[in-house]
Amino acid sequence: MSLLPLGSWRADRLLAARLLAALCVLPVLASCAVTEPVRAVPARPGAPAAHPTTTVARTPTPTPSEPSNATPSPALTTAVTPAPSSSKPGARSTPSPTTNAAAQATTRPAPARPGGTDCAKAACVALTFDDGPGPHTATLLDSLDANGATVTFFLRGDHAEEHPALVRRMAKAGHEVGSHTYSHPELTRLDAAQQRSQIERGVQAITDAGVTPTLFRPPYGAYDATTKRYAGAPLVLWGVDTRDWKTRSTETTVTTVLNEAHAGSIVLMHDTHPTTVAAVPRIVAGLRERGYTLVRVSDMVGDPAAGTVITHGQHPA
Ligand SMILES: [Zn+2]
Image 1 (cartoon, rainbow, N blue to C red):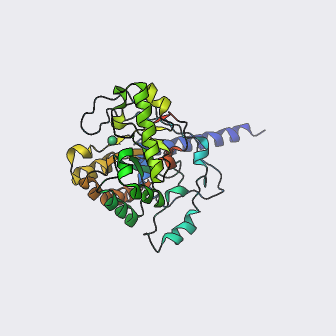
Image 2 (cartoon, rainbow, N blue to C red):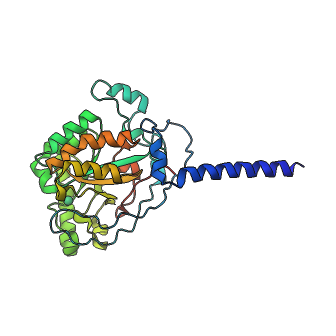
């Protein structure tokens, strides 16, 4: 019997593993990811899942806000637990990263496409843009296209009615489209029938424009049990609030995102402001320099049940 040698071998392995974990985890999860150039590390199709398929729940950033008559939102308590299937390599429908990058080379500066990214391995960040489409959205879409970045939009139904071609362009470019009600009321001030109407009219208007929204974001982050009941989709909030609607400063918007984003962050911005649109190329470049892969919200959170409240996505364990 060689119990002693086996035992000490195990102890050595355990010690080494603990040291590694301490080195990686102690400073802050994201900093570990950031030191590695993880941009082009999409999962190899068919590779076994080496990482856990569930994410650690993080405490959401308190008091998110939005323009104008925002009142304190209800406590944001639920962090998402991604559906296990979401972390499977190649679960999304996009082609394999290598062939896709080659195919994209003529039109885009060869970014990693989010569909092939496993956010359990890569440090992912999801940029989100609310309240459009509007007069500055086409400029944003041009910019995202030029930078090969894919994001998530939360559209107002009435604005989708005004700009249906922009809604279709978003989807065609690979961006994700969610609903943000029909005319942006604070839902918790409405009765159940009014809430339901706002939610359903918003979805219908976007659908009529040609795209079926798959996510929902309540205006001002304000929701209650009725909202969750009628949302018909996951409620996507955010962890990084740029307050771009208030500062109207390109510089502040850039620095807020670059300072506050970490692996798994959902970043709130508004494409209704030209100052925000102007910030996007620097945000995209800055996040990539820091090792982040830009993905759509669903790339990071999978396919949670309707009514699930999401403030944060998956990140490397
Ligand atoms: Zn909004």
